[in-house]
Image (cartoon, rainbow, N blue to C red):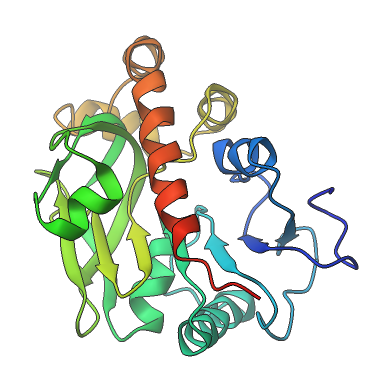
Length: 247
């Protein structure tokens, strides 16, 4: 089924904020698994549904906006996240999506002292929840592009991954997973982002070489780490799928 065929029933709802931050590997994985899904993009003027009732899973993508921006679609996404929780529908959030989950469940998002951009290792906690989501590799390298993060976790949430720049790389809360990193990344997304990285990026490369990769370093690291990222993404999405509400 086409992701844009919104009139037909589907198993998964994917919320996209900006054109530049689409579903990437998530969409590839859903298609490979034969999962039906709906995609709604705020920047395209597509209204988010009034309810997530009837879906088995909800995915929320990233974007260059701040989760604290005064944008109606961000508040709508938070409302759908809370409704999904009430209905027992597992939510998975990517970067901005994870930040919106933190806000929706009672946490707080703010600017970090320095950005985190490129391929960087994170450390997962080794807890049962961390191993369930991430497997046994406790130091996977993942792709980052953010300066905000969820600095105060929602009540009951468990930090399951961290990095030197960002103490809260991921949290688990019930059946839900919020990630600060971009596990849905593809080479096409990286190339597109580097074409228009924003005015701050060249400055950050110079000021924060311990957390911001330059384009050459990022491209080289993609060749080294992409396969591992996709394998980790497949595990994360498969774990999410085991938790989907059926019917």
